[in-house]
Image 1 (cartoon, one colour):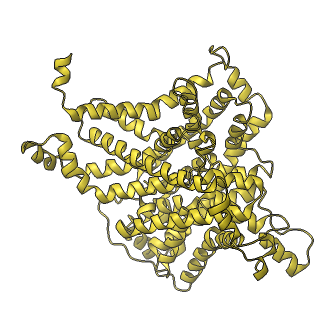
Image 2 (cartoon, rainbow, N blue to C red):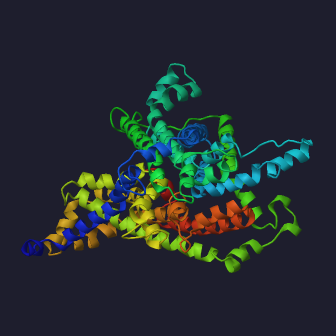
Image 3 (cartoon, one colour):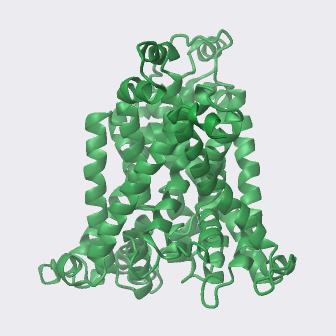
Length: 564
């Protein structure tokens, strides 16, 4: 046995260790989640009582259907917002396409729960800016809008989810040549008829794939449903799972309750892949033909106005409300010099007991998770693409598995696997880092896999012929060639981890609170002024990293990789 180990190359041992890490990060939590759902909490015996408890009350079943309705409504609104913008940016002579891209990027960067707080400031009943203006202008006694409704919640979620459909749709439209559109025009079809009957049907599979992705993101979202839905008494799956973790903790019931969400997600991901594999937008010859911009005449200004309207709703209005609140003594008093203050920022930076620690935790955990995810993903991608170990497909599947597991479900799996003995990691920094790593491992793997595939193995073989081992080849060839791609993937995982709430809220301890958890705690306290200031700090730091990424890698690095 020792003789066999002595001839194993050190790189192979490293690959095997990484496989073990992948099992710990993904396979074990999922397996523990499944086992916990069938385990009696006291005796440890196999039982179906957890499922009976999870779905034995009408309120719990109603929450599941509310999530499905919410996902469908938000996805439909996203399609209405995004498809015209994507078509305008890809196919027409609309001015201000850079402005439209900025809108999409900004909506992508802003954490959804922060946008929800912005809309509470704008459309809260009676005290929201819009309602105050309505009463002042018309003298009406009733509010004009109320964000604390089902449709209010659906719209707010859609305003920060439409970038997914935009990216999918624009990427597909960029591949459509003008031949069939020209043929339709020759036969007498106008611009709008051609678009509705020729262009959009060609990319419909991709639009549908984007709609499915938004649906899945929505049903797995915790922050916005908690901030808006709980006060409105609209219960959804994620908020119900959170209630199962209130004292006394019923982790086994939560595990059982999360199973349908996991099955729905896996099924729809399969449908999404089927839609994308159809690739209805690819020309029959496999080559892209000539693409000509469609001249819209006066209609181009209508489309630009639509992009401006989306920007107003998704970015400008909620951000102005948040900035105003962050510098206010009382946000409801509006703009006035006597209401202006910097005490909210001073309180957070110098007086709040947990704010400084939350900021440090957020960026330490996010940096550690991004580094670990990129390292593991690159190594696994290299093993799979170079066929260094058997069952490479299984490794790739494990790396991508968290993509079909909602973050809140993954968090419950980590709780089931690591909260108790022998590891007892609940509430520790290690637990948070591992959960963030697993949560965003698919993004890192997609980035690393695409990069390794672009490098021809002959370059590495040259290093090995000269006496270097495989690790030397990776260090001397692969990593330098993928430096920018790896940095882009690291930044994207880092930024997403800084705003992660769904996993953090279930695993956080007294000393491991992050900014996202602190923001949620402040929202429960009703302290929207301090919350807005903390959100401003998070956005400023995030923008620094986004600016760094744009300078080093390109302005669309987040959107391009975010849509993979």
